[in-house]
Image (cartoon, rainbow, N blue to C red):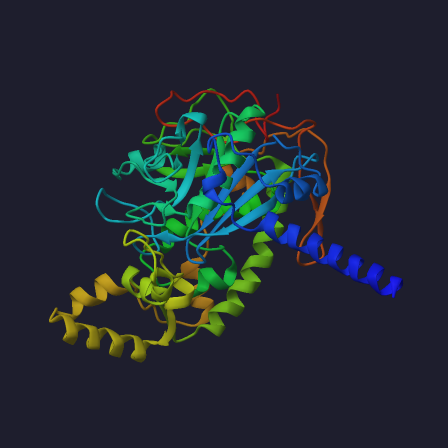
Length: 438
C-alpha cells in the first residue's frame, strides 16, 4: 500500500512538472504584468537561449515572412552566427503580397529596415509597438510614402504587422534586452515569403517579381552567412555586403560607386546560386501552366472568421495567403476572374488588375529561366561587382546542398550593430563592419 502511495505521489509530481512547463510556455496573463516595458522574457525562452549558447543580451534580427504569416526572432549565438529562438504567428496584416507604395494603400512594408531604440513605443494605444522604420532610404528614393507602420499588439492592422498583446510583449522584450546589451540597430527583414526556388517560381508572374529578385540577394546573403547583411542603397536599389573600392559613398538616388564583394562571400554565393538554379528549373516544370491566385485581405479574413467569435469588434485576425490562396490553371484563373467581374459589375481588366496582377509569359522552362534569372549581383561575381576586395577574420567552411565546401569569414568578436542607420540620420560608417578590412 505504501508503495502505491509513493508511486501515486511521484506520478502527481511528474504531472505537476509537466503542468508548470505548459503554463510557462503559455500566454502570460496580462493582468499580472506590472511593468510591460520591463517585463522579462519567460523562463522557458531564457532556458532555450542558454541551451543554444545565446547570451541574454546578444544581438537579434527580426524576420517577417508575410505569406506564411510568421514573425521570427533570430538571435546571435556565442559563435556570432544567428539562429531562430522564437517564431510567432502574425495575428493580422493588411493588403496583399507586395511592398508598400503609398499612404493609404493598406500594404504592409517589404524590404530591409533598421530599428533603433527610438523605434520602440512603450506608450502605444496598441499595447506596445515597434516602428518598422518605413520609409527607409530605398523607399524614399523611389517616392514611396506612408507613416506609422508598426509591429504592434491588438490584432488589428491597416498597413501594419499586428500581433496579439501577449506576443508583442515578448517581441518588445527581445529588442529591449538586445539594446541593453549594446546593439545599436536591429535589422528587420520584411519578406513576402521564404525566397526558395519553389516559392520564387510559384510567384514568377507577379508584377512584384523584379522587386523580389532584388531583395532576394539580401535573403541569399543571410542564408549563406547566417549574419544580417550590411545594407546600403544606391541607384535607387538595395545592395548588400558591398565594400567601397575607392573614396565614393552610397547615395540612394545616385549611381552606385565602385564597390566589390569579399572573395569568400563570392565563392559561397556562387555555389548557393548554382544549387538554386537547378531547383528553380525543376520548380518551373512543376508549375508549368499554373498560376498562383493571391487572395484578397477579405478572403484571408474569411478563413479565420471563427476566431473573432466572442472577441472585441476591433480584433480582426487574418488568415495566411497560403490558407486562402490557390494554384490554378490559366483557364481556371480566368474563369474565377470573370465570375468576380460579374458579381462586382466591373470591367474584366479592372478585376484582373485588382485581384491578382500577373503576366502570363509563354515559353519552355529554359526560356523562363533566361527571363527570370536573378540580377548579376545575386551571384556576387567579381565582374558584376568590381574588383574583389580582401577579407579577414576566421574562415570556417560550410557545405552546400551539392556537397561542396566553401568558406565564409566571421569576425573575431560579437558585434553590436548590423544594419545601416535610419534615414533620419546621415550615413555613417558603422564602428564594426562584417566584411570590412579594418
